[in-house]
Amino acid sequence: MDSTTTFHGKEEFDYKGLSWISPPAGLGALVADGQLEIDHHRCFVPKKCVHRFTGHNKGVHRIRLFPQTGHLILSAGLDGKCKVWSVEQKQVMRTYIGHSAAVRDVQFNHDGTRFISASFDRYLRLWDTESGKVLQTFTNRKVPYVVQFYPHDDNLFVVGCSDNKIVTYDATTAEVTQEYNHHLAPVNSILFVEDHGTKMVTTSDDKKVLVWEWDIGVPIKYISDPSMQSIPSTTLHPSHQYFCGQSLDNTIVVFQANNRFALQRKKKFSGHVVSGYACEIAFSPDGQFLVSGDGNGSVFVWDWKKHKILQKFRAHSSGPAICCVWHPLEPTTLFTCGWDGLIKMWQ
Image (cartoon, rainbow, N blue to C red; front, side, top):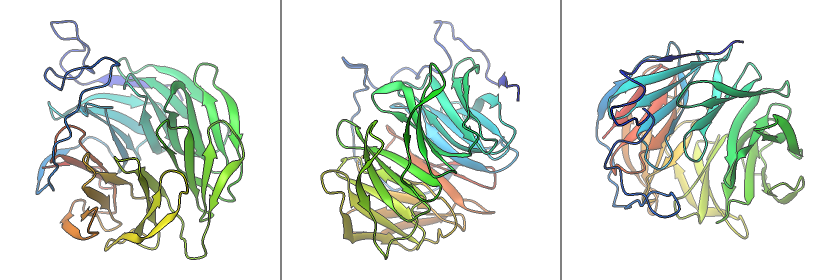
């Protein structure tokens, strides 16, 4: 399918010559290695919906915030479109059309200049965020379920596929450079853990969690337990000590994220109903709160230490609240999206 893109903002460059994807002035000072100096102040639970972003014709399956600053939102729609929205101007900035079926996952690279979209039409596309050009198209004739950039090299990314394999692509040549083939069912989530992001945790419909060393096609650990359910989505705690998985028995399970990767049986979060949906979970930047949507369109906020539900609100009307992300700099701002086609901003 030919790709098209539409710019919806007023102008692509401002009077200073800065691109529309540049962070607004005053979003924290840059430090030596190009990382933003972020002051992780205490976060608070959001209370109400302050804005609705509308524009997708069907449901929104995934949202991602611009790395480090969170001033733009990237959304993946079941209408086959990706959109980038401005949080400050509360409007859609650019639409990217290049898929003939629903987009299942999207991911920014580490400076937000590019992103990858993975769709049920079996294609992955690498886009230039600013211009909307397709830089590369990838396919192995399988449906890509999840995509992640390798933390140390934006030219490499891994894809979990419907044929039970995880493959690494080189973005410059569009070739597969490594294959990880030990799951017995489609792969649902990929998470890089440990300080240097060299270990990769994957989950699949086969109810197993596998841990891999980067670029070595044999897992170094199997986490499998008769009581475990399938885990369609995982996320890392800001302390990098733990990672959480959304388990289809309506609980969120917690594992150690280094050394032993053991299941933490005492840490468990429940109360929501997610069976059948790959609802993504998120942490507040200070690690105090855990957030998840559920299959009925509600959003739950738990206290990380006490495992108690602190807040529950009705977020989306028809279908699940499938994805939520917490703003990296604003301590009370949360975004959710659902299959009702809305992206909501809560404060």
